[in-house]
Image 1 (cartoon, helix red, strand yellow):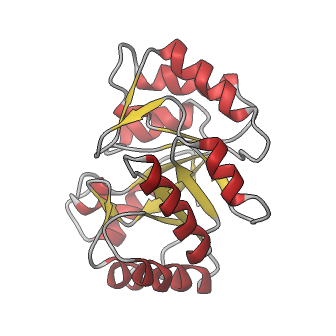
Image 2 (spheres, helix red, strand yellow):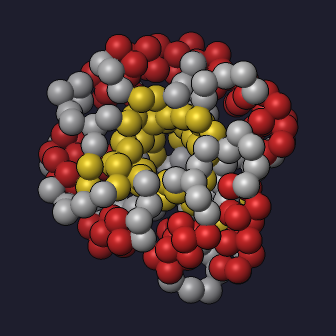
Length: 225
């Protein structure tokens, strides 16, 4: 089973109407709801996080900042927002220093990530080695893998399987999971969870309202809340 993580994002940014969108989905079975560190000001993200927590759900923030300074500022914001999970980012040692003593579960990126929207560079072997290295760091609770943003040679599903097998922490697959076969591939690779954001807002699963798209994903065998 793999957890479906609802991302209130499109094109690697939190959607402008994220609060209103979430309010229309409060009866959804989703347990994990996330957003990015760009797209809305911090006070709006705080308000959104409060709503999500009030409904008994877990709050996830994914860092897609492209500079060290912006990434560390986003981590400080995550602490201010009081998120449950922090996904992404590459400056792991510095992030761990900032997160020390907090209850935030930290899932940094595995592999070399660049640009915005973010892509994953390098060979499969390099990414697997990097995943193994980061997963061994005290304070790292899991990994964020941009499986379908992989710009190297090879099948993203194979890459995901190799990363999952190489580490002893949960792996979340993120980015461009925009059709049922990709969801099934991430389940088959034994990911702990997978994120879907842009695809929902672009009606990639069914040409209907957002709640119907979510329902469609939950119909896929192996998907859990």
